[in-house]
Structures are given as C-alpha cells and as structure tokens.
Length: 90
Image (cartoon, rainbow, N blue to C red):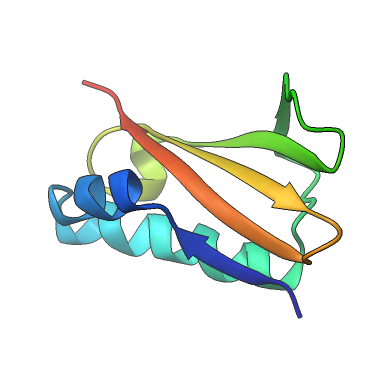
C-alpha cells in the first residue's frame, strides 16, 4: 500500500474548500494509496528522475462545487505520494 500525504500548502488550501470539495479531494488521496498511477492522471514535467509528477482533474460534478486539480508527486523508491497543490477553479 502506498502512503499519500498532503504538503503544507495543500493542507492550507484543503481547509478553504467546501465540505463536498474536501470529500472529493480526500477520495483522490485514498485512491492514490491503492493505485498511485491511475489511468486518468496526466503526467507533468519533473526534474527528479526518481519521481513522477502528475495531476488529476476533478470536475465540478464530482466536487459539488468548483473544478479542482490535484497535483502530486509519486516516488517509487519511497512508495509514497505527496499532494503538492490543490488548484480550485472558478
């Protein structure tokens, strides 16, 4: 099982989301613990050869509010995901 954590900036943003948006983001965090490479995650450029950066887009229909991008980095060596940013749209 992979561990998935929030970075300090992501935790701060999490407190500013509505309950429905928080629940949707927490659902993504839990799913990353089961599969850190879901097929719907989009790869991002990463300068560290030992990790991969990805983003999962949540639609407003999934959050009950705004669209949210969950940006995370996965380290195979540590078998862990760090959710770096939560970007909430209008």
